[in-house]
Amino acid sequence: MKLIQKYLAYSFLKPFFAALIAFLILMIVTHFFDYMHTFLDQKPPIDMLAVYFLNRIPDWFVMVMPVAALLAVLFSLGSLKRHGEITAIGSSGISILKALKPLILISILISISSLIINETVVPPANRKADNLFRIIRGRDPREPDDTRKNFSYAAAGDRFYFIEKLSENTLYGVKMIEFLKGTTREISRMTAERAVYTDGSWEFYNGTLRDFSPDDGQSISFMEFEKIHTDLPETPVNFEKAEENPESMGFIELLRHTRRIEKGGLSSRRHRVILHHKISFPFSNTIILILGIPLALWGGMKSRTAGFFIALLIAFIYWGAITVGRAMGVGGILSPMLAAWSANIIFLLISVAMMKNARIF
Image (cartoon, rainbow, N blue to C red; front, side, top):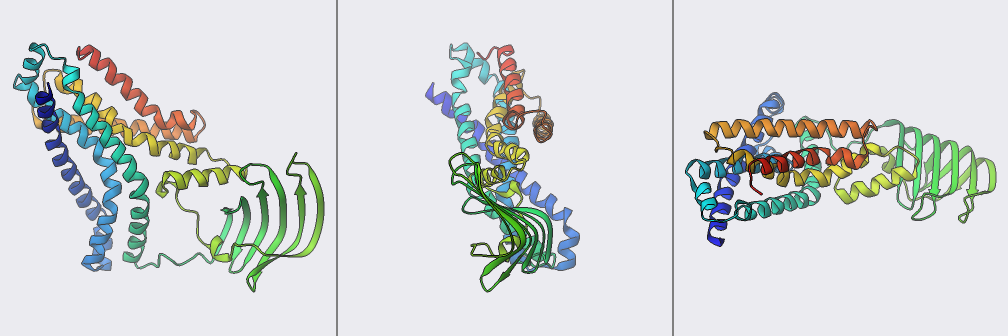
C-alpha cells in the first residue's frame, strides 16, 4: 500500500511543479505584454524590472496553485487510468480512496502553504511591486496628496476621525470619536469646523465636545468652544496617506482595520468579505483537487490537451463563482462568511457527488 501511495504521490507532484512553473511564466509574459508600452516608453533599468516581477510572483503563485493542482491530478490519474494501473489497484482489493489519500494530504499541505504565503509574503511584496510600478511610470510612490476629501481615519488608541477635507496642515469638518478601550462604547466626541496643526500639536476651532460615562454610555458633559488646544499623536502625515486597499493587507492587519472601521460606525461588509476570502481561497487547492479525481478516473483523460482545457474551464468557472459570491456578499444578499466560502461549498458538494458516482467511496 505504501509503495502504491508513494508512486501516486510522485505521479502527482511531478506535473504539479511543472504546471506551476509554466503558469508562472505565462503570467509574467502576459503581464509584460499588457504593460509593454509603459516599459518601452519609460525604459526602466533591467534590475528594477527584475525586482518588480519578482515581487509580483508571490501573488501570482497563490493564484495559479489551484489550477496547477487540478491540471496535475488530471494528468497523473488520467495517465494511470489509461494504462490500466488504477484498474489493477482496484482489482488487487486496495481501496481507491485509501490509495489516493496522499494526494488529498498533499493538497491540504498546498492549501496551508498558500495560506501562509498569502499572509506573510504577498502583502509586502505587492506593496513593493506597486511602488516600483509607480517609479517605472515616472511617479513618486511616497508623494502625499495635497488635498483629500470626505474620508475617515482609524487611529491607534481607539480613536476614529471623520474628515471632510485635508489641505496642507489643516483639517476641515472634523469629527473625532474616542472609544473605551477594547469596546465600541464612545467615551468622547469632538466636532470642529477646522483643526490646525502647529508646533507639534492640534488646535480645534468652533466646535463641540461631549463626554460619555464609560459605565453606561450616558452623556455626562457638553461644551461649545471657539478654540481648544489638544496633544494628539496624529500629524498631517497620518492623514495624507490614502487608506490602503484591503486586498493588499494581511489577514491580521485587515482584521484590526475592520474592527476599527466598525467602531467608527461605518459599514465593514466589503472588508469582512475580503477577510473571509483570504482564508477560503487557499483551500480551493484541496477542493479543486478533489473535484479532479473523479474527472480523471471517468475513463481517463483522452489526451493532455483535453486535460489542459478542462482544467482551465473549471478554473474560470470557479473564479467566476468566487466573483459572484463576493459581489453577493458586498451587496448584502449573503453573509460575508457564506459569500467567501460559497464557491468552495458548491464545488465540494459537486466533488463528493461525482466521487460517489464514480464509486470511489
